[in-house]
Image (cartoon, rainbow, N blue to C red):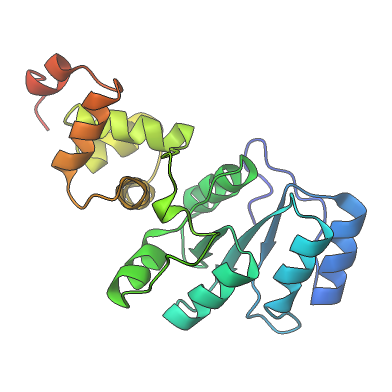
Length: 207
């Protein structure tokens, strides 16, 4: 699926949990993409992968997004979590972010976490409360453009992304910063030097 993305190489495909464990042992991949809800798989495969290859990162991609499912996945060792209906650009971003040691949650997963008031304080694998704050290179680009006053549509055009992917990045950034509005994102960007206060305050491009 994402094997044709720039810099992404698929080294194997598994049809069962046992097959996946064998492939991980043989190829030592940076990222394992798994639908642990699919036939032939279960959540225990994530634990096995983490025990066998602690440095291997796990990206879950499923059709279900119940709070119970998300919590169990994170407790098992899942590093990133997206839905199957995410667009290709979002999937590729998730793979790259996960491979680089970060974490990626699509907007639908973040929404579910908030709506169900899931207590993530004891979930070591969830990066929403990490300190210090780590933004990926792509998230930094998105934040900088937003802080300059650009709309999601303009950001998408400038970075060759879909509007949906930009929206997901925005939600991830807000979650990592612990904020819930654009103004707070802008303040963070200004304080950390991502954007000049003058460029933000006097930027006159019509959106």
